[in-house]
Amino acid sequence: MSDLRANDWAEPDSVLGTYVAQMDRLSAPVKPGVPLSLTVHGLLVSGELIPQWQWFSEVSELNDHEDAFYTGMAEHMKEQSDLAHDAIKLRDSGHEVTQRQHNAVTAPTKYIHLRNTRIYSPDSEPGEVRLWRGRLCDVSGWTPGAPVSAG
Image (cartoon, rainbow, N blue to C red; front, side):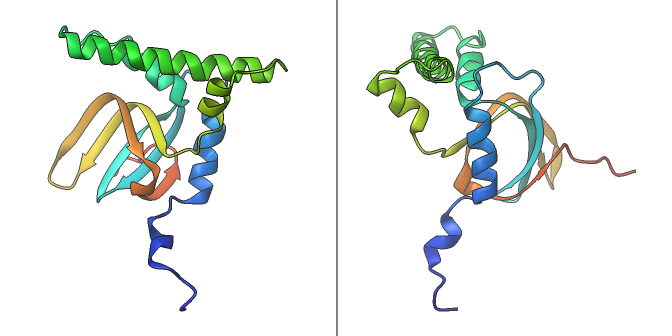
């Protein structure tokens, strides 16, 4: 087993990475998203998988905060969302994309984006968040679908 490197375990699951990358390449909004359950640092995280650009778009539309920092971040996220989304639409219609748009579309998939997320902890009731973003390399297990209720 000397062929296994310690870093191999730090890499995200290639099947999950492909699944998320395919979702990120969609040009139309996904509603509802694809149900997905993840194990992240001992917690169960369950929600609807959506494209990265859609997640940024929905975050930019949240009005939960009124401060200037949040407003600036929301505007930046919306710009990034629009850049990636426009690039995907141009690519799908056979048009040329700018280098910046190309980079936005072809960047390696490193994050997973969920909507209507529930986070289950062994010591408490599930917490709910509207939008969740996590690193793919932090996911230690996953399954399509939502958790099945015991009982």
